[in-house]
Image 1: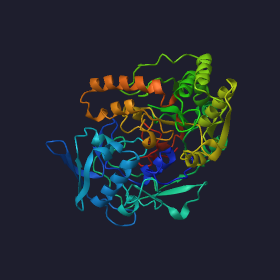
Image 2: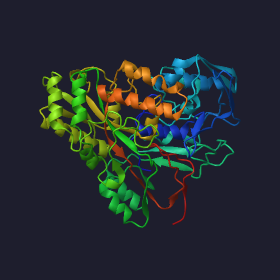
Image 3: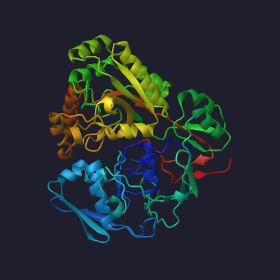
Length: 496
């Protein structure tokens, strides 16, 4: 399988797609989403909630064991939830009065006040995922990486065969006990139908396609659009959209440093961007791309058009110039992180710098592989000290419908995702999300949140891309997921 390079192994430490795919293979979660995107028990056997909606009790199912041969316990779950809560489940940490084990198989979450979306949070696929790790691994800050790669999932990571940058090997976990229910989305019984999965980060896409065509690999994660015709004309290959909701490309600006510490500079970016131009490089085939103006994405219940008058075909270059001038921009260097091993984001980064330079902004690319960007984006300092101004990334359109867990629509400053947007008025509304009882009430709240977001410009969206994977027709039963994830179970090889 040709998949993006894996450089970080801890799926709570980072939100990158390769790391989440790795996590999905070797770890499990307490709940998992079915094909209708409803959370179903996965590691949990039984659970209940108190009459006052403040105490949840969870009992683990039988048969759970770590890859090192030890049993999974409630203490492992408690440590993992506490760690994940600080990384991606902030609402849980804010609302939790206590998270503690009752016995080896049972633990409780006691809340200060009800949190109706708790089970949804525990089954979410938005990164960082709520993966359960051994207590001794999870008993550390989420800012400190776990490197042990010992999970309880359907696959084991083969340390002996790991060749960073070249290949990673995952073996069937012979001791894994799947749930008895049929497979349904990411939920149900995880039945492994192959003995081994080999993950190869092949950077050159033409090389990867050649390997796919001759059968050296069976799966290519993100073929570029210029290879679609070659794939579609090959009787042994097919394009397959596994993530029908697609991903929203997003431009993240550094709120902590000039020039984007000034709201007018951020507003300038909002007006400058021509989404259709960016879609021509991120999704050149119009079948697989469309514009997106809602912070709640295109595919969710809460997508809306509030405060979107800024959107204009071709962008508004003159307005952008005026806003940059009004921001006091004085020629400060704007450093755009450029992932050279991710074709779509690499092309978008190049287009962005060219667009900025055309209006007189002192912009330059900082090229590196995605692993280098993951390391650098944590730097909050000025560009002269290794910091950054902008980077381009993406996230599933589907997860934008839950602002309690999605990383983009969070404006809590230092607690927010990279870029660290901050707006107290917006955050006060976001805090209400978990307490709103009906869809219609959430729709009204979503409109108000979006009105504020596009005023202070927490980020800038570049379009929605629904990119297909490519695989040999002999590789079947691939699971469709509303995220850029590749489950390894269920897939099987059939005779040509």
